[in-house]
Image (cartoon, rainbow, N blue to C red):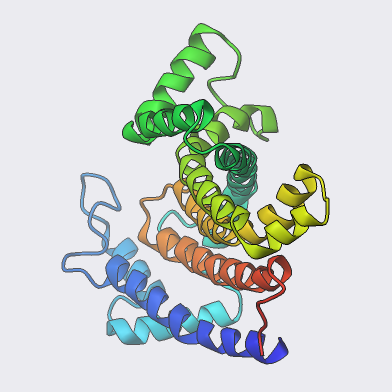
Length: 289
């Protein structure tokens, strides 16, 4: 296990460098003036241009500027935006609400997706299975922003069940409706994955053996079938955690985008490693040499 973890950590290096360089290039290497529009409709003063050129090394080749960025990352500095605020401060201000929103959405997604998937798998082709399939198709047919606006209008404005705005600091109740909206489409896929995996597990030899031992159906499903069926679900949820964090962040500042993506890349790499390690806990047949 230790050797596997070390190999995965070494694999982080080229993935991290490749991803961050691509994002850095898209933010800084495209044709045009990187300072265009930073002073509104008027031209930026010469003093501002000189200061920005000096601070962001705009007179240096792109690969050299990327090297400076990596050096700053090595000492924990994500840079400073054109507004003068440190990127790390902006991310720390946004991440508490962002992470809570993402984790709450994942929790709702797992509760709905796994529960629906298991019940649909126990009686495939029956009314519940057919109904959840049709409802799922309707949910994923609508774009997320349409569902969000409808939910805000119906449950926030008309019924008044949820607040339509959030305060600072944001409470979990204020995040509940956005989390439900974020989770709806994702739980459809998760429920289908869980359903397929549970149906396959229910036909396996170890489930038949458990039944011949006289174990209750709840124990057969909950301990033997479901545990070995969670690997696809865990993989999907691990991907979703990073995806939901990305959906929760909006920025138009290239420096902030590079810093945010750098943090997200690290989060993705760590989450994927934890997901892979969880396979061995869920399925004893999996070993990492």
